Amino acid sequence: MNRKIKAAIIGATGYTGREAIIYLLRHRGVELKRLFALDYLDRPISEAFPILTGMTDLRCQELDLELVKDECDAAFLCLPHTVAMEVAGKLVGSKTRVIDLSADFRFSDVKVYNRVYGVKHEYPKLLEQAVYGIPELNREQVKGCNLLANPGCYPTSVILPLYPLLREKLIAVEGIIIDAKSGVSGAGRKVAEALIFAEVNESLKAYSPGKHRHQPEIEEQLGQASGGEVRVTFVPHLIPMTRGMLSTIYCRPQTGIGENQVRKALNDYYEKEFFVQALAEGTLPRTADVAGTNFCHIGFAMAGEGLVICSAIDNLGKGASGQAVQNFNVMFGFDEKEGLV
Image (tube, rainbow, N blue to C red; front, side, top):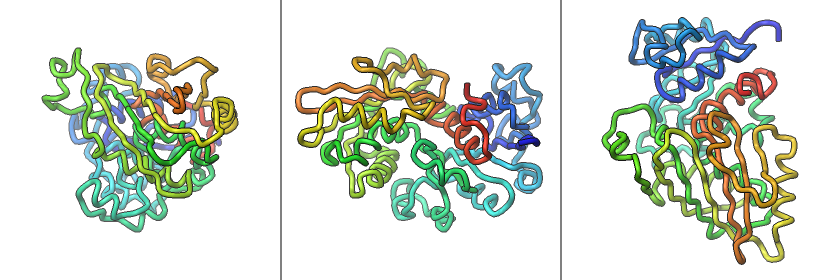
């Protein structure tokens, strides 16, 4: 591609915005054109994130959608759930292709979205054209899409290891238990008592068991893999570190299925995928090994009659902005690794 793709980040002063800026600044095919935010207006982005000092002189500005449509080929929406839909709804249909990091277009059924997020979706027709953006699973659909629904971090860490096993009917759809742990940055860059250092440090807690917003997203995607309904027990935890996610998944192999079949399914499905690595026998993933990357590491062990699968990602990388840039690369015909390694 001869010309550079002009990109905007809308919601540039959050954690996902910061990560997207870093990835796109080192992307050889991108001109990062505009940064939009609600704060730090008319101030350099490096004031919000000193790590960017010397990397860019771009300043934060108030959102101007006409400017985005006129200047930008792609817009990354690093906005809160229920806010992004309004922006996406006004951009889709222009030349600007939208990569939405919120949950506003992740569901195929608008009724599920309305129930889970407690608001009425204002652009239900767009759900029909949005593509759920795990490139390893939906690459062909991602290539031609104009509205990309970037998956949640917890769902990414769960769907990648389970999808091949459910698709090949190697595990039961009943009784799947997901024990997932995330660093504090997963809650976003906001001031909240439960997220301050003195509350989080030297502590570990579960939250929203059976009620977390990502559970229906997980169940919908796993249902597509299995060809039928899948219900899971999903319990997320907050751990005292900034970034990283480890999901431990308990499930039951189908009769006659053992370690060799599980390993073959994972290896066959992901052997040509750069960013998803099925680890060697006897090796389980660690968050330290994927921190700051767009990788997902998957390992497993047989435990009696059960199967225990562990996956590790960076919640801001493969769980958010890294995957968003990977999707961008697929959409615009770049090498998927560009800007990410």
